[in-house]
Amino acid sequence: MTNFETDLANLNQWITSKREEGAIAVLAHKNGDMDTIGSAVVLASIIGPSARACGLHVSKVAQRVLEQVDGTFHLMDEKKPMWPRTLAGIIVVDSASVSQTGLTLPEGIPVCAIDHHEGGSDWDDADLAICWKVSSTAEMIHQYSMEYHSEEMDSGNATLLVAGIITDTGRFKHAAAGSFTAAGELISTYNLDYAEFVESLEREELNHSQRMAIAKALSRLEAIDAGEWFLLHTQGSTNEGVTAHSLLAAGAEVALVVRRAKDETRLIGRANRAAVLDGVHLGDLMASLCDTLGGEGGGHPGAAGWSGEVPAITARSGFIAALSAAERVRR
Image (cartoon, rainbow, N blue to C red; front, side, top):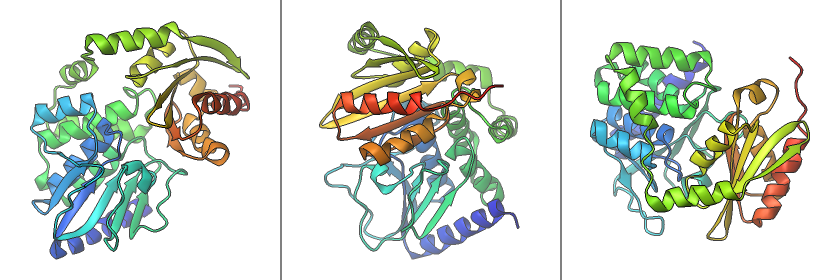
């Protein structure tokens, strides 16, 4: 068997064993984006009644898709998480470390980690850790479902996985070949209306205060040459992803949005396709900040983030220094 096949067999054996012992919590990361929510909900659905998808947060896009397909996701209290009495195992999806879940996991409960942030995952203590070099965790759940749970799949689950693939690859701008293959298989098998679905994903329903926050972030915009890269950066308070994409549309090769909230600084980075092809890897860059600034970070070549306790100016300066050191690959 290939490594992929071995991983899937090990995963299925682990799930089968824990399902016989009791309940399984399928835990998403604390940012609750479409990939982690879709992966968690689909995996819990195909495992069966003993599994429950849960976590601290659901993004607006993920919430919209969940409502569309009538998916079930249980929000937990960060201070008093309610775990099932008969909890036999926890599957953490799309998280490079325990800290990215935002929760302290109960002691003595076996943990299985399923992640695609290769090189940035820290699951040495996990009972089983599976990390593939793919563009989204949804692709991994798709492979597992095809191999072991095809009968439990339906159009709703397929919709959640396609949404995870689309959003985590930046509408396929940062996709590998496997992303197209997985999305194509799901769309054709379950007869999804791709064009209509993408339009629904792209609707960004912002209230007045959110629009004002984005406008203020854009008014604080600064442009610099960070080494060989044209960087637009600003400080934002909400909808950092929308703001970062606006900076790319304005001509940035790399966009950075800095947010300070509750004694934590967050960096949200985006890079256009040309910059990625020329050598920018924001996931590696954000991960490298952990060595110099502490905190946690990682992601994809074109979309990544970091969070930590240092002041915003320190985090921004660290990112600019790391980006400035990145050499452009001559194509």
